[in-house]
Length: 356
Image 1 (cartoon, rainbow, N blue to C red):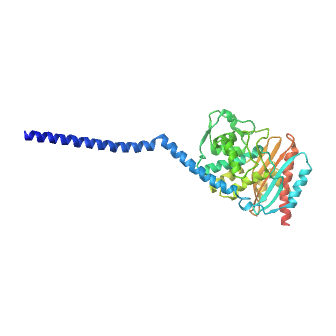
Image 2 (image 1 turned 90 degrees about the horizontal axis):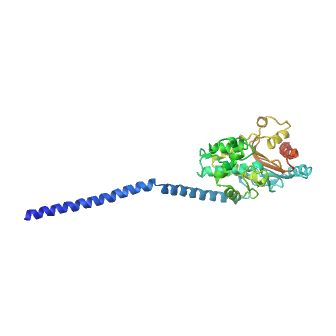
Image 3 (image 1 turned 90 degrees about the vertical axis):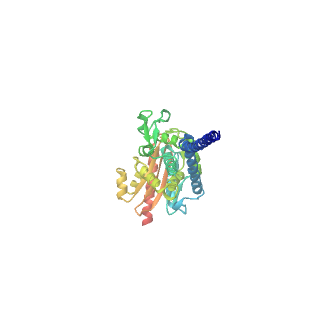
């Protein structure tokens, strides 16, 4: 009888121990699988992505805030106006009183010339330069990837310059191609794709204000033939100065900024004007400027009622300058383009005189 009781007690103990072991094993498995699910769950992944974006955006705002507080940028801070050059520009402009002009030149040593430099005029395709700047800033902050594929949507197709509008709806293009074609052939559809990827017009306009580009504003997607998208010559120069002489962009993105602008196919305004100032006729402009010691990274704009060109100029002594011109006038009036070339030629005339 006693043996039977001990056996029953032993069996009961085994059952209790087995139950406890199973219970503890269940807790352990729960912890393990819970950790796994937390790692792979989409909610967690989205949270981590959003967290990284928030950090990047915070850092971006800090960096933008530093730049917007500067009066002048980097080595380009205004120090001495070139009165003679400013007056020559004014004289050229006064000869065509029905044309509205905004012109600005800023050497990296602080010398500058201006003519209505802060006047807001239709930007035409020159608006693509500040858009490129913001896209590269987002690249640095890991808010987009250079090889990221963007789908061509019907509502983003634009008339005018470029070849992307002829491609199949739904076709995908990498951002590096979109950004390059926006500058190289001034592709309007590529520009709209990039605006959309950045986050839209409102996001861009907010960034422009944060950067101190107070006259730069996008109202409509490209091609904006009515000229509602606005900027000034000084704002356009400031975009180049931000890219060239501050820490706003990483060294890699600064190189990309220049490389993309170097692909621009149109030389008929600022570059040709510089060549004319050197006493040469337009043609094979990039090469002829280069053998004279000049290189221009520029972007033109032309919507008929407004012509624009802005660029970074590298000179024979390795110094740099930024210059921009916008002329608003009657539709397709050839005097607008001629005036920009004449104003640009005066830059070279000034450089020649200063050396004598």
